[in-house]
Length: 160
Image (cartoon, rainbow, N blue to C red; front, side):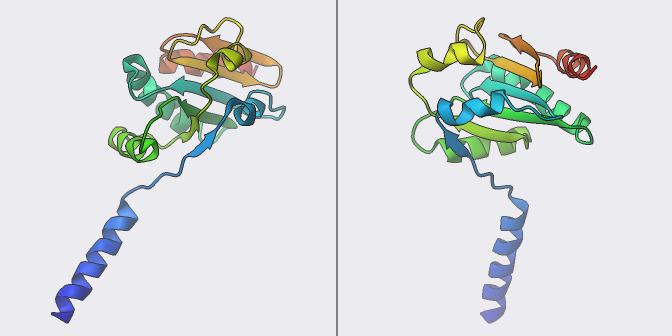
């Protein structure tokens, strides 16, 4: 009996080490906004997305590929989830694990979208997906689904 209990505890511990648990910070736009104005030597790739948005889900692997491809360079990928509702963190964890997405994810919980959409980019109408890439004073905005090659080309151009 003791051996079965010890085996069960050991198995549960091993499983808990292999299951990737992700913590999500939930912010309002005022808390998120400084991430669009950082003045350092890093290139930022900030994507607005949601699990319910088909083109968003289709492009997520592109951001993961960028994150991995530029891991040894000063490029930071940040995925800003606009998902909401009960157990959003639990649903996001399951979704991202299933899709093998390990980039940093923040949850934007700010229902007054009309007050902040234009602060992301004055050309943005609020439709998803949307992506901002910037470094210091150079900036590029996409109000549509993007590809790996578009992201890589933009990152390379921003760093020239």
